[in-house]
Length: 79
Image 1 (spheres, rainbow, N blue to C red):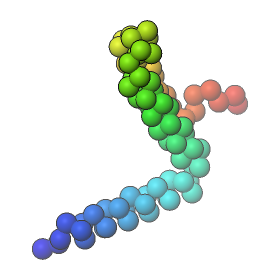
Image 2 (image 1 turned 135 degrees about the vertical axis):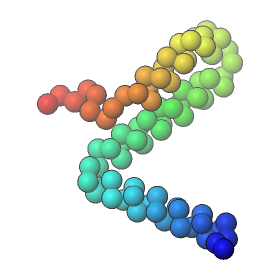
Image 3 (image 1 turned 120 degrees about the horizontal axis):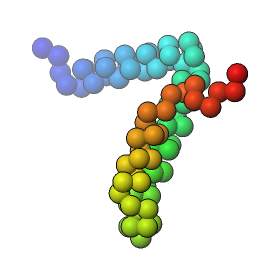
Image 4 (image 1 turned 90 degrees about the vertical axis):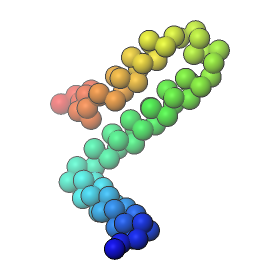
C-alpha cells in the first residue's frame, strides 16, 4: 500500500511534468494562467478591505471574479 507522502510526491511530479509540457506547447497559456492568478488574488484582497468593499458592493465583486475566471488567453489578441 502506498503511503500518503509517496502519493503526494507522485501527483506533484505528474502535475509538474504536465505544466512543463503545456508551457513548451504554448507559453501564452502559462503567462495567461499567471495573469489570471494575479488578478484573482488582487480582487480577493480588495474583498478583504471592508471600507473599499462596501463602496463597490458584493454583486460588482462577483461580476469581476466571474469575468476574470471566464476570460480566455486569446481575448484582446490583435491579430
